[in-house]
Length: 180
Image (cartoon, rainbow, N blue to C red; front, top):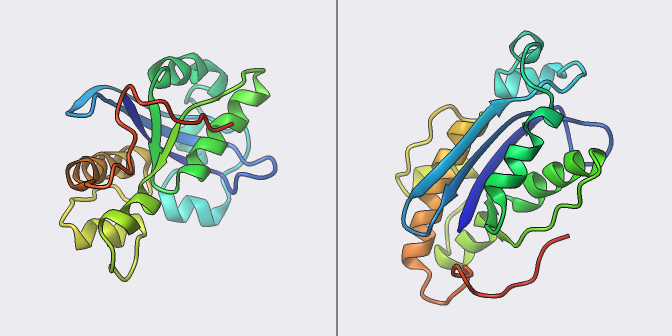
């Protein structure tokens, strides 16, 4: 199993920045078999730059669940799955930080679609999600929103699985190191 994940946040991984949105698609290597999406109340103001980038406002998240209220679902849907994201260290470390604040250790195997794309599809001028999706004719709707970016990353991941002739992506059942 794989879980393709995207998060939106109030800032960078370091420091007190918090999640504002999370989307997770659980994938069996052939298709999406489960999904989870939620806005998240960060319990702090969303900076103007982030508000402009994502379109997520303080008003949109004021009645959203706290991360503590969705944490068990995040743990459950990613259990026994390889954590996949575009620039995986950002999304993984943010979720790990939020879960750590709640007293959970979070260990998952990871795959980065940026690094994998550079090897499977060499020679593109940019590997940002938007530009890579354009180069590969992958529709990208609701850019800089967790569900839109994660849905596009699902399609990118499926293309990577299909074209991975060098075994770069661990197949379900293979043992690979956990990211801590």
